[in-house]
Amino acid sequence: MSNLGRTDLRRRGGGEIRMAGLLPHQPPPCIAPAAMADALPRPQVPIVLVGLMGVGKSTVGRRLAERLGLPFVDSDEEIERAAVHTIPEIFDRFGEASFRDGERRVLRRLIEGGPRVIATGGGAFMDAETRALILERCIAVWLEADLMTLAARVALRGGRPLLTGRDPLPFLRELAESRGPFYAEAHLRVLSDSGPQERTVDRIVAALAERAR
Image 1 (cartoon, rainbow, N blue to C red):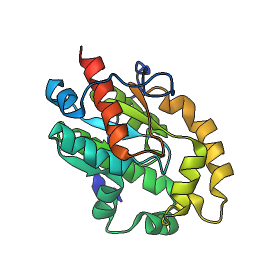
Image 2 (image 1 turned 90 degrees about the horizontal axis):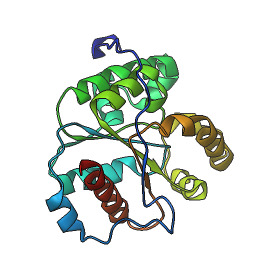
Image 3 (image 1 turned 60 degrees about the vertical axis):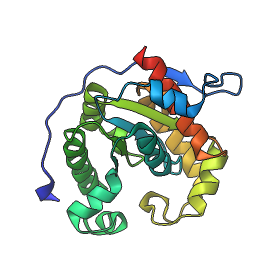
Image 4 (image 1 turned 180 degrees about the horizontal axis):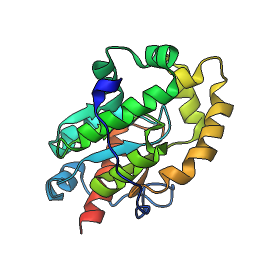
């Protein structure tokens, strides 16, 4: 993992928090999706999606990037490409600390690559240096979902080292409690529910449009 580069940025204060579609009685503005995207200025900084595993960062990120006309990149895929190992292999052979170190380096490189949509791993925002870099140079979007929804999603997909041998629901509940205060530093907070992913994209676009006013 030593060939991935390094950053020494120190943490700054947290970002502002805005809500978009977080509660049933707080729907996003009733604006057609195409109209919202057309009215939104092209982002000048990366948009980074953060949140727990299973919340849909990669799926939503790809659709958001297409809507905004930006490149999309999944940081986990980039880590695997740089390390020439899958993420489970990195955890097994080198440990979580080595993975987080490589994750930090890869994310810095991606952020320095210009405006794009970046889907991050669930633990990326927990690293103080990574979080400070994202909050200073990007728009961080916290995708939040009901824990039952998350548990159902992750149960259908393997390859998550932190879930090995664990019951998804209680483990995700513990993660939500420990990581929630850090995710709350993101600039925007958006609900990702069990409905179509395009609905989540609509909410993000609406939140970005509101922020750009």
